[in-house]
Structures are given as C-alpha cells and as structure tokens.
Image (cartoon, each protein chain N blue to C red):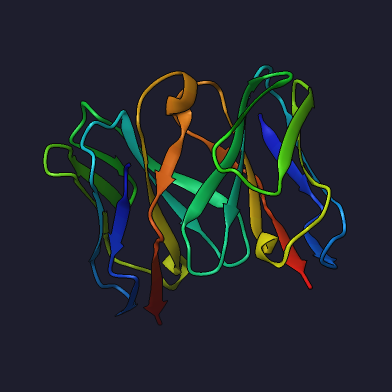
Amino acid sequence: KQEVTQIPAALSVPEGENLVLNCSFTDSAIYNLQWFRQDPGKGLTSLLLIQSSQREQTSGRLNASLDKSSGRSTLYIAASQPGDSATYLCAVRKGSGGSNYKLTFGKGTLLTVNP
Amino acid sequence: SQTIHQWPATLVQPVGSPLSLECTVEGTSNPNLYWYRQAAGRGLQLLFYSVGIGQISSEVPQNLSASRPQDRQFILSSKKLLLSDSGFYLCAWSPGGDTQYFGPGTRLTVL
C-alpha cells in the first residue's frame, strides 16, 4: 500500500526566504507525482506535475524535483511571498488506466510566510 | 475552458438524515470524475471514481454511495449520515490522463 509523507507538517518563514518542502513515498513504482496548493476552506489547485520519467518541473518561482528510485520529491519556492501562505499537498499516481487513476495524498505542509 | 461546480458549499445535517452532494463539470465531455473526503488531521481520501455514465468504483467501504446519471454530473449520497461523515468533500475531474482538477468543495458537519 502506497504511503505518502510530507515533512515538515508546518513551516513559518519570513518574506523573501527560499524554502524547500519535502515529500516521500513508499512505493517507487509511480506513474507521476503532483504538487497542489490548498487555501483555507478551498479546493486544490494543481501547481506542478512530474512524470515518472522526468527529474524536475518549473513554473515561475516554483521548482519540483523527483527522485523516483529513492521515493522522494521536493518543492522549492524561491523568494517567498505572503501570498504563498497555504497548505501544499503532494500526491502520487500509481499508473495509467483503470484503478490506477487513484491519487494517494500526503497530509500536507502548512506554509506561513510572514511579511 | 472547463469549470467544475459543487453545491452546496456548506451543509449542517443531523445524524441519521440523508445526504446529496452534487458536482457538475462544464466545457468537456466524458471526463473521469472523483469524490474525495478530507477529514480533520487526515489526508485526502479517494471515495469513488467514475470513468463513464453508470460506472462507479468504490475505494472505501462506508456509509456513502455515488451515482453518475449524466456524463458531467456526479452525485454523492447517503441514506443515513453518521458523525464520522463530517468533513470537506471535494469533487475532481480529469481528461482521462494526468492532472486532476478540483472543485471548490463542500463543508459537511454532522451533528
């Protein structure tokens, strides 16, 4: 059974700091890994998706890396801003087709960026 | 562009009452549809998914059921709510492939 762990559970940083969020998964046989953002009381917004054959993806100030063999991914946020404050969720997908559509989520990292 | 709607946004129901949450997707056809629950202190848990009309797969045995009466409509139901059904319910869709797109969610409180 796939398990996804995110460390730390909460993180508070001053504005402008670069930071790294960590995600680990127990079964390295994944199809892809996705990072989401969730604002309080809201749905999830997809940030980055990394296919199993890729090493990293970048979008603006965000960079996500994937080391499939070691079961790890990191989300790097450069020059953090108060608007980045949210819960960041990591999710892995087992495969393509059928029940492999299922995403297994971590519990998330609550990020607070202080002005 | 595609949009996903959920209603109601919030709901307070007594134990033992029925439940019906609705999710609709616009701007796409034959999407895969998903119901997730997010309970306090727990990660997102997939409850049901559907790859087509009338095709429902259940991930977790529970007090809930799902139906897909139309291509872009997904309904989550219960005949009798339990306290443990409280949580944040999220509907999502995907074009059969990679990224899942989530709706705004329904906050359910069972008293």
